[in-house]
Length: 396
Ligand code: ADP
Image 1 (tube, rainbow, N blue to C red):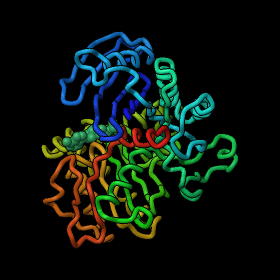
Image 2 (cartoon, rainbow, N blue to C red):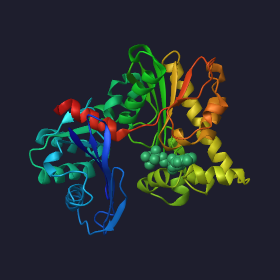
Image 3 (cartoon, rainbow, N blue to C red):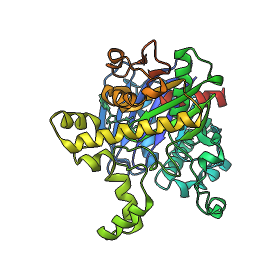
């Protein structure tokens, strides 16, 4: 069974075709600048990457171009469109309605639309992508896989904000959490790799990418995670502030003459390690600058790893202990310096890092010593594969 995995942003569309039985990627790529001009990137397995500038006024043209590339006579990974057996769509916000992946029909789309309020930038784009695929591939089963679903097991003490209860009742203001597909995938995989039972293990997953979050996974279920109503809460990120006293927002908005939306935009786009360092949101640039003596880059890196360690401590408390810690995503997989800085602060938990093992990039590996009380691992995430698996589970 071949699954087309689609991840739609407001002006982009990432795709992969995965052969579900071998779990091999047959082709992958990206549509960018949808609605502006348009650029298609296509790469079949073992083949050259092709980049072409083609107009894409809407997501529909983007999907059409992807399908054409997939069945192209010379470079196409598939013989015919009928070789696509199912489509898995990443959907950012499922609110409280979606606790797991779901076969998409009109009712599901209407329910996702009701969550648009909670993710105004992401959900509408996801729905447009679904509509385009349904139109161009009628009859092909489609599955929605939600970033929020895995965290729907959080108890009220973890998901409630201490604001007037009516706000929760009327507006569904609460903590939802994101990166759920990744936290789910990595928390399962680390148990397999470490030889532990998912159902009786306390795991903390540190998903450290441009967007970053930590989750507490108790016996296979998410019981807390650092992102909240939106992906702005929690860790210090590339350009996002993470946790901040709301009074500081009122304070700087007033000083800078910003309205609320303007202030939140500063917290989303001009803050984080980028805002603190003034150098970059990319950790390669930050490490480089820090090693050349840039003080603000050093502060940004310290702020980042300190906040991760604080959340790990909080989640060890939430679960009354921790057996396994996973590092994943761009920074978690590739930056030994960040992993070391975090683990240095976790000695009291019995974490002991093996510095030699830790000196690796992008590999699935145990990086704690044999004597370490907590098993610390690098576990590369694979959200597309996770979406393909969820899709197969619902359509096969
Ligand atoms: P997202 O999916 O949230 O956009 P990723 O998980 O792809 O983010 O992570 C992107 C980030 O990973 C980059 O901004 C960069 O900071 C970091 N990164 C990627 N490769 C490396 C590397 N070799 N060393 C250090 N950091 C890296």
